[in-house]
Length: 483
Image (cartoon, rainbow, N blue to C red; front, side, top):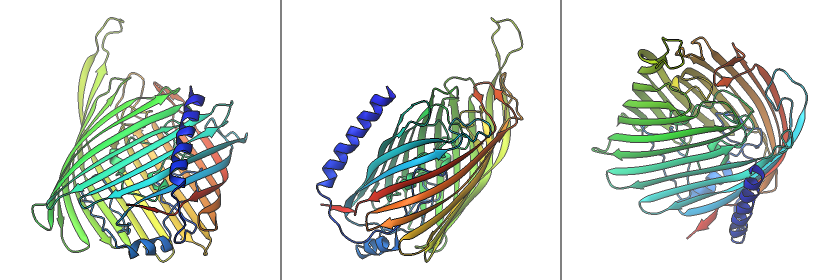
């Protein structure tokens, strides 16, 4: 079934590339590129819009980013976008040497496997509406035991604007060969040059515990309404719904609903503040452990066009847990439902800084999460960063790294409260441009995960170390104007 799905996806991709390729034309100049990735990806060389592309876009005029602090998206640099609509194609072919494809212990038995994907960025702009569509499809071939698997990702984002109001809709869908862990998958929104569909981590399922077993399907939908009663103030209302399903892995399937409201105020041209309230409801389809969170945060944001984007929000969250407690050992005994309340601190921050040929990004998040399929609720701390530098006209280098710790918060019949996972990753990539539309790359990544138990309940975990060395080629066409 997986092979059939992979073939169908590949045929659809070839059809899409064939339709668009007939209209492709060369214009401008593409150089080596790199991307920011909260979760690393060894299958791809970085994809970052070059200075030449920025200059070409600026000649068409720029559109300022206007994400509210209390909205679904992170603040970003005022990257110029083409005012007119455009389409752009991309592809990637990669060969990887994996020292631990099963993620067990400290194995040094290297296994080669390959991957490929292709896709398109589409942006349709009109007087009131901006629509972005990003599609990526491909597959992983012979990772181990001749097991192949498809890769699918579809991201949609649309914003409709009126004089004093705007409605934004986002949807992110993905099907990945490895459940939870994206250490070697092209799963980051930044794989595409069009970043108008990216969301803050709090609205996405937790991905900070790694496993190489099984496959994962997830989808997140967000609807947002922004109302501007004055020129410097706005109200934001949004709702989101996420699902995560794991196949061939005994993990916790998730349904997650969020409601949020906030007030945004512009202090100066570059500085903004906000206050927000967020309700989060976590539900597991194969395990009884409902969790509700009521959170209040204060936020500050600073943005300097083309140079700096910084935001920091912090507050407190009242978490309510409904836990089944069995008081009678007989099989027919009905469990008692205990209601527990806890108060936790929360924080979310991100900074992007760009100067000359260097781009830096650093992020940190702390708060109650779904437990990434392993824990029935966790307090998660994660920090991640990247540094990209244009080494020369044709060479680009990137360093990435991060650390995450997930602590279990509620004791259940199958889990203790002291269970935790620690995860580290680091990597480096260097890419070399081959003309205007293609480049080759070499990437190395190291991942280390440790836990204080071997197996607990629905999610089993092991300490392991994993190294991946990848080489590949990627390409991206010139943006093709539409209309």
